[in-house]
Length: 103
Figure: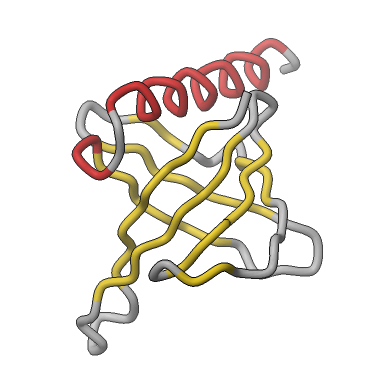
């Protein structure tokens, strides 16, 4: 099942403009950017890293792809549909549990 997410990420601190990013997420944790500022982008599939975390108000996403720099993002609860936020948090928590079980 694919979930569309809207995400706002701040660029470098001295460049105070806001970038709007949209992602597609499947149930296995594969994340594909679909648009930046409403413009389509070349699809690169990222995987949620085990460093991704869930907090009460936001999730920290660490996205890894072969031969790409690691992407780090904060996604706040208010930045996407509540249903999508819950799905993403469940995905991160299930990956964290799977990682603990393999230890």
